[in-house]
Structure formats: C-alpha cells, structure tokens
Length: 265
Image (tube, rainbow, N blue to C red; front, side):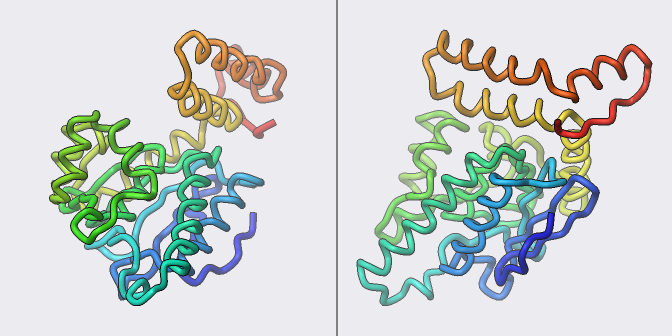
C-alpha cells in the first residue's frame, strides 16, 4: 500500500511484506511532539484499516543512540492546561490504536527509550534492544506520571512489584536488566539489532497472515478475560480460519512437500 509522507516518521518497505518505521526527529532525540502524535495515529489507523502487503512491521528510531526520549518537553513548556490535555488525548489515541494494530509490530530499541518512548515500545508486540540502550519511566520526576499505558503495560511485562520500583524511582535500567525482567526478548550488539529484528519479521511475514492476526488477537484480548472465557474466545478466533484459502493452501502444501504460498485470504 502507499503511505503518505510523514513529517516525523520515515517509512520503508524493506522486503515485500516487512515495513520499517523510524521515529524521525533525531535533532531532538526523536521526542514525541504534537505532529508525531498525529503522524503515528494516522499510520496505526491505516495499518488497522488496510495493511495491504504489510505482514509485519519494525518500529525503531533514527540514529544510533536514542530510540525516543519521550514527550517533547520544549513544545510543552508554557502550555495551558487545555492545550496539555488536548495533546495528551491525541497521544492516548495513538497509544491505544498501536496496541490493537492487527499486524505484529516489533520494537527494535536502538538507543535510550525514556518516558513516552518506553511507553511506545511497550505498546508493541515485543522488543529487541541494542545492548547500549537504557530504559526508564521518568514521569514522576517531573511532576506527572506515566499516562500512555505505562502503569498497565509495564506490570504485565515485568510484574507488579518490579513495575512499582521502576515507575516510583524513575531510575534508568539497562537492556540486560530489561531482558532479565521479561521486558525485552533479545539483546543484541548495536550492529546486529536490525538484522535480528528483520530475521524475526521475515519469519512472521512468511506465515499465514490471517493466522498471525487471529493468534495475536487471541493472546491480546484473552489475557484480559477469565480463563474459560478466553478458551472460548480462542476457539472462535480459530474457527474463523477453517474456511480460508490459506488454510487449504497450508494443508495442500504440507502434503505436496512444498512451501505454502499464502495470500491472506
């Protein structure tokens, strides 16, 4: 599909079904300003409404030191309450839309991910990180608190007690600590980060697209349900795949000992 040209995001289809998205404000540590909020919300909506050829996306930052420093505090300096709340409502819609994008999104954390930058990463499906990256939710140190899903997504990744320590101290932690605590799936040398993320994205994109979407949906929403209800939700998601062309193709390819050609139908 054709995407518009965004002022704060750089997009590239690096393979037929893999989209790389870069937060692209390197002059201000890829900080999230109002324009980036509009750009991200528009992109997540497009990927939700019609992802076209995109079967997996990688979200990273421009440069080799910063993934995203969080909200642009220079833009926020002097905002009235009304302006601040209006901007934050835009950011909220962007975060919530990202969480429910049906296409898997891997966060490739190329550098520091602080505050809203870490919250953006937490809204992705899973994270790979350069070993030089550092993480923090610093909001309580400037008189606010995480408001982009951080108080909900972080404890679901690292547990309640660890999340309280991270959020209430506002102290940074390393990529290795993030991995040890369950926040990051894989830690890489900086030069190996994007190749590793691309290898995983390629594997995801090679599987049946409708199956990927249904499995992601079942995991995401099932975790919010009582277990027996979640079992039933899983079966409903499964049953949507039984009469798809890709299901027939997958079984046929297995029996013919060849690689399946999935069409997302």
